[in-house]
Length: 479
Figure 1: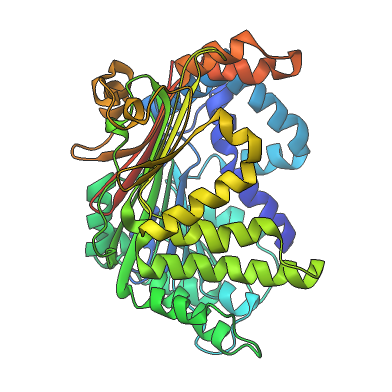
Figure 2: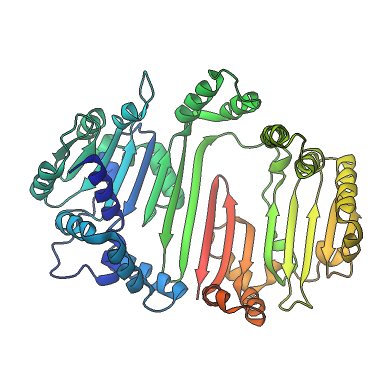
């Protein structure tokens, strides 16, 4: 099999979960696939690790099918499986039929380090390894022996109940890794798993410091280093050498969940958690951003990025665009804690409220003046002004007080409380979407081409995002 063939095989394996979920695997079932954790064969100091469930079993498989069918409608998984088979061709079915008898429930990919000398795609591949747990090492070895490309770049080895494919060095290091000295047993990996759990479907783990350090050195070595190199270096100093982060994806019969956690990153001084619970109770869209935006490092980083874009646009167009000038000279200096609320179930009852606590009074005044100038006569449709130290813009509200000090807040809304219950105890919600009112609005006025989107929205319940002490959660609820 060629290198391209191995890429196609990898795609086939990754998409096998859909095939198994949609048709129950088809034919006689082999022994229960290996449930071994691929991370137990990955060196503990690896920089990057990704695992995925390619053969979900039991309730995991049932939950995946149910939640997909709830969003897309009955038999959505069956239809997806049919489309997959139609577009993947005979190669997919052949590869999957050969791999399925011995492949485990999860697979993993790891980058165990960075090349010490010249950094190229080929040298990086020497540090990458694919981990395939198996209950039939003999079958795995036979398949790999028959299908591995005749190449000096890739190699393979079957050790115990793991088949390893990748660069020679990475395979050698993974083969020498014992479970007790693996990534799965490392303190930082176990800490992150303990905080957010190991994703039933997908887990992503990385150690960013070596990667960011390499990126910084490459940027510094350029003939013309980027203007924001100082900010990049400052950001690197906020990451400890042992820092790590993890992202997981999971599903239940009525939720899809994305979670992340990190360790070894310096917290932004003075940053407090945002909370949408204090916004009006009837908000179907509620967003709150914290004062982390006002940190000098964050502002300098954002400003440098926009200045780079501004220079490129000025060079291309011969002048700096008004939109970029507005962002860099009016918006960025005024950034601070902010919130947005949208409510109402008909066009006549829609209300929109935005509040910003600017970094300084003068910056807030400048932004207000710029917005009024840009809107012109249209500004009369909105209420714009200051309320104490906040810059406020509303539509549909009789007064700023209805937005800033509502008689009832989201914290008392049953739909919000249900969604908040999906987050870890102590988490502060920064985003909330209630799809019930949105479905009511879209049902009133939509074209035939929007019918599918309207149908999907009607099957959704809520979307909520929150954070707590270095962890973040995003949960989508379905009906």
